[in-house]
Length: 212
Figure 1 (cartoon, rainbow, N blue to C red):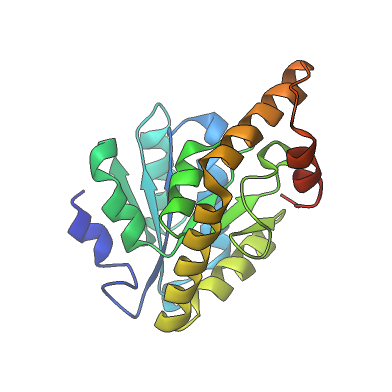
Figure 2 (figure 1 turned 60 degrees about the vertical axis):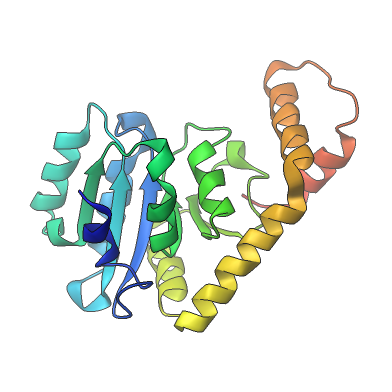
């Protein structure tokens, strides 16, 4: 799938549409099937919403069939594998990053989406605690209805508001800085392994104040 096929459904190029993107392996552990089910439940053609799924994996064909069976094949684009050096324009063309995965403690693709200015809509996952600021750079959901409401709230913003949100997300990520992110990753390592890492008290306090 060429970029222009995706861009046709993105508000940056077509003000009638809003697009959400997920990047990752098309495997059971990523719960992409949950995203597709949520999409089918929450949106109709009248909502002018499009879901972009980037990646390949063993479940890809089954996921495509799932979208067809649910009658939303025209609202979901499967790009297959996109070389990492060419993925930035896909982020830029979309309005938000969505995920239903519960198996990642540190999603690099999500962080890339945030760096590109995309607010995150993430299924509640304690392990992803600290990757985004609730209500600022990201939004947590537990049910399909919550997912749909958050996505609609972001999608129904004016083009100016969407641009403001992207700038806000980028600025937040920039102010967080590489050092802060490195410390966060070490804090996750410490929690998982039980190995104490000095100098992480401030990071853990920040994490305790952030709901993910």
